[in-house]
Image (cartoon, rainbow, N blue to C red; front, side, top):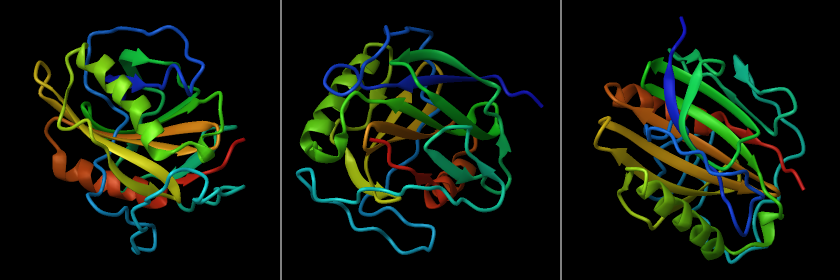
Length: 226
């Protein structure tokens, strides 16, 4: 069954990314998000990773290969994989985009409803982020949030919730859009020359999306690209 899902795809322009032109659409809430942990991000084993406190250069340098198990999603040539959560359907070929800042290289999506889904996207960056300080990365993201605010999005806070996902630094935000009554929680993950986004969007199935988001984050593997 085809799911017509409208999404906002967010890339980093300026300091980090060589971006294409901004594409403005109808402003439907992000379909590439996930609610960040307030203290730590659970791993696949169920053991929380510590919240990073870094100024750049002293963190996990990443994996060189991917080994996701079960029903996995990993686009050909992409630096990531994850396991499809129970009860979710792969809708990667059916996601439509309402608005975009930047140009993604890969996109995958799993859903339990037409407006209830988890999306994973990858953007190529022009610099290696491993030696860039956390506050610099967060500053770049604050600029992106301001641009989205002009498209009708409201963010719970512009101060990120920081954690790690597969050892990569993660900056999380919660967004909503009054006109569509959609909610979305977004992770921006950084490793090497890639920014990977995991997003949970919901309209009527928040519990299912919360569970699916946790499953994607727990199984996500993110290969280092330099």
